[in-house]
Image (cartoon, rainbow, N blue to C red):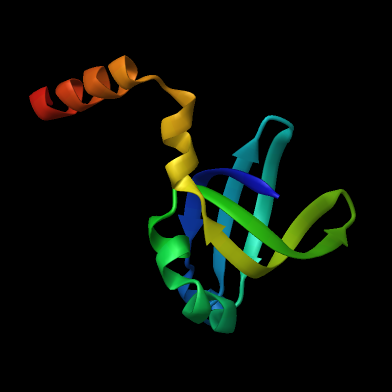
Length: 97
């Protein structure tokens, strides 16, 4: 699955587990990142705005999680969603703010 990163959480009680909430056009997905996966894909987990995650689906009642096995930062694709004029306007607004 792929989606925009809404939230990253690393609770102190989670023993090194990171929780990422992703959103795509169909809704929200919770991703569980175990410490060994985090170590391999740290840069994507920490800095990615748009992630592609592959893994195993875990269901507990109506709650569905993806246990991440591979995480890829595909944030570069976000630039394709806007035209050059939109990017220039966004950068100008950021420089003012």
